[in-house]
View (tube, rainbow, N blue to C red):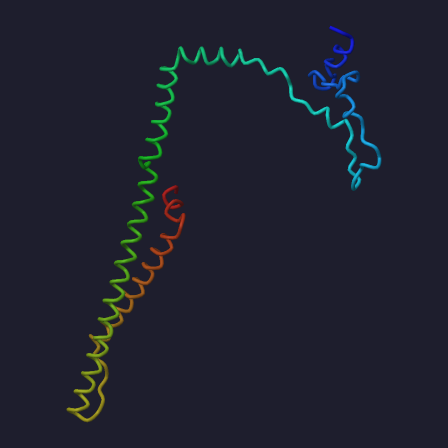
Length: 193
């Protein structure tokens, strides 16, 4: 090897890779000289330093990876068995509900049913109260037509209306609790307690 070739292929200290240097004695070396100052445009300096960009001529040793793949080929059935067991465990864990998830669903279902039943009961109780109030008004009108003067309310109907109003208040409270328990995360917190 000549001295010029040895200098061109000399390893650089920074990268440990061979530096590709132009051969100053070759005919193509003239294009590696920096351009004259007149050819500079818009402050961009183009010199021969951009010709130092190079790609490595050597590649990393893949013998370790090849050895790994050779060993993996020998145990491929065992690796597939372990991988399928792990995948099966994750599938079963994600597919079937846990006891806590069942309790949360049960809580949500119970509160949803309670909310619907409460709304129906509120509607029925309200209709009963309206019908009782109408009956009281009818009794007053009949008494006024018979005697000519207004009479007091029937005590039994008034008591029934008061009882229905208390029942209505309880149904509204049940509705409120059920609606609060149906908010996101409420049943999860209730189940964890």
